Amino acid sequence: MADSNGILHSLSHADALGRLVLAVLLAMSLACWYQIALKSWQVFQLRRQGRLSAASLAACASPATLERLLAAQPPSCPWVHLSRLAMDACRQWNGRRDGQAAIQLSAPDVFLLQAFNRGLAEAGARLDTGLALIGSVAATAPFVGLFGTVWGIYHALIGIGAEGAGSLDKVAGPVGEALVMTACGLAVAIPALLAYNALGRANRRLLDELEGFAHELLGFLVSGLASTVADPRPADSAAAAHAVPVARAA
Image (tube, rainbow, N blue to C red; front, side, top):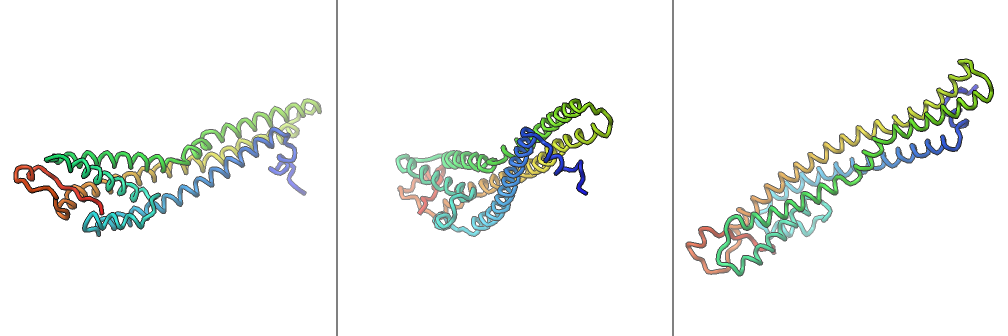
């Protein structure tokens, strides 16, 4: 004989509003788990791309090599996007540099730092996509379940009062069935909260790795590239002491 106080029995005796609450919790759970799976795969892919990008930068001997390498990479990768912004900044600085007699050391740094700040901000925004949904589910699911419980208890007490039966065995069953709503809300909220915290830590770690890559790329472009590209202007000993040639990307 089926359990008369089980979850299926509770669903069969729930009214339209109670079933709507359960449907909302189910939709929240499915959306949350979809985002958790999607973000977890994204974190795995980005960690792999970060290791490959760091190794590729270490193997590059010139800015031309770096740009040829970037041309074959997917633009959606934050490391590739950051590198392309840096190369664009080099070209922009070179364009302004052509009409000036000398450029101080801080000039290429300023262009590159602006590019890195923009790239890091864009990467952070992309990494945070989807976390708002997971956090919202974690914060609201218990209250949705609690609302279902309150409504279920009210509905059960109205039925018990109409029947005129106030014994414990008549009250415990309907009230226990109503408490299932709270359990469902917690079952949705707890995994969402744990995933939100774990993915937030993973995103911060990725941003730290991306920032470290930006520092390495800055040193590569400011110092390493200067030795590989000749300055087309006539050399001047006084100006050359302060000028820092940055490569034009091929």
